[in-house]
Length: 311
Image (cartoon, rainbow, N blue to C red):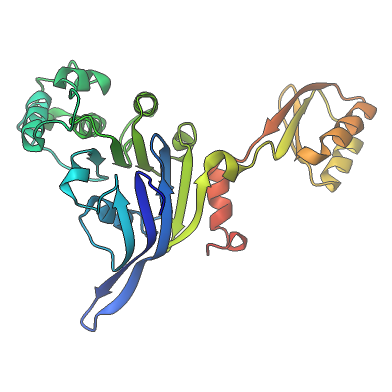
């Protein structure tokens, strides 16, 4: 296997449940890699195996087969853990502590940062917009504030790799935007981010790589831009669309949406010239012509539909 920050190679995990030890496969031969400096979206429906994968990655569970490497070490190796910042989906902090004291406590537990200068606690609180709440007891924090504090805790040791499970859970749109901007700044600083979230519209704006699993099996993995297709469709915006032209376009498979002041026509990129000629002949004025790419949500749903091969 080539060197990467995260490597899963044919990883299998089977749980045994009930009196007779019934076997339930949580992961079945899953393989993928995440390279340094990437933001990787790790996606799947509930029960797909995401939590099991993250638990194995962190060394909380052991796989039954396959090979895993994190920062060049086996999962759970202290040399890797010192370079990882982790935000679980569900966590709880000591409510009697202040935010500042909690971060001091976690810094004492973690010990010295792995090379370089670890950020000051005041800097971390400012990064997650909690700098004015450092002396407030955590018991008085909102759910979103606790989530921000969890991210600050993950950044304590200036980690190389951040593993974030639903990091924007409980945040309002403004809070999600701030965390998204924080992740982009961390990426710019050379951090690798392995991110699981159900808010696909947020992930789409920052991810480089996408990994999709379902029912314990890998469905798709690769660079997001390659997976969504480069300029696979074209959107033509016109001032008006005669009924005869609209019917002809629909017969060719075009998607048409009427707005208050314009009409949007989406066709495969290969059909843009003939579509433009049809529109001009019909008397429509083309206001815009833009490439249209598949969104992450569309890609996700396509791959999990029956004809997408996942179910």
